[in-house]
Amino acid sequence: MKLLVTRLLPPVTQQQLESQSVEIIQWKQETVMPRHQLLKQIKGVDGLLCLLTDKIDTELLDAAGPQLKVIATMSVGYDHIDVPAVLSRHIHLGYTPDVLTDATADLTLLLLLAAARRLKEGIHAAENGSWGDWKPTWLCGSQFTGKTVGIVGLGRIGQAVVRRIRAFGAENIIYTGRTRQSTDIAKYVTMDTLLQQSDFICICCALTSETQHLFDYAAFKKMKKSVVLVNSARGGIIQQDDLVRALKENLLGAVGLDVTTPEPLPPSHPLYTFPNCLILPHMGSATMETREKMATMALQNALAGLHNKPLLFPVKS
Image 1 (cartoon, one colour):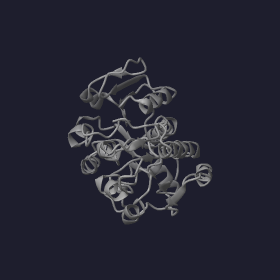
Image 2: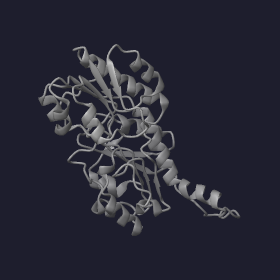
Image 3: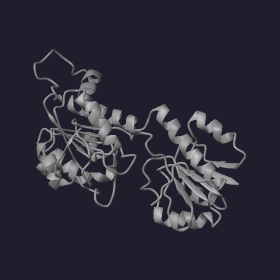
């Protein structure tokens, strides 16, 4: 049996991979496996362990051949995979759910604090020599105490963010989403109400056809001009050209992004020019504990599929 792995795995899981009694074909460079190499190497393999940077579509499935049994992605999201095309060919599909909740919630709170407290400007001031005499209002940001925090998407990550924010004194936490949750940790409101009332907004929802460009110019116009907006979900939820326009027009207080469109975001992109826009390179799950667990789960899925066993973490639809 042959297993194609599109990237080097974290060290503990890499050792587990190399100890398996299957033929391993692996892209061992610290870069995305080039598409032409992926299409070439997938031919004739029985299993694929991929990342969210690998597009899994009909072209790739055709190149693989009918013997392909399993695709295991080392990710919680799977919008890079044509799920109906995979499942229609009776290929097992696995992912890594419930693994990055804490790491992503930590990073979301970090972005909120950093954007609200003008961390980007503070670092630049310390590094470029503009840190001078103390001034009463210099680099003053905002704090959570007594403020309204809006959560868009109260799933596992959204709920974990709420638990963390409460420790900082936020008194009114509201949320909106596809469904109303049976919970007392936050109050359900409409999207418009959330946009109008929130001092802080955290985007924690999945990217779907309904949430694509959910945050556009019309949405930004409804927000408080002091709002702090953070996105740790998917870049496509924000219409980035509209975000640039909103920042130019001073419609938002501060923005923190861990996700963008595209990724990586080119250094020449205008979003980098705004002192109140903090951008991170998609670090939400970037702890060694989380990445090792994700890799191990993906490997377990791949091996189960290769040996005709039920996947531990299957995508069902």
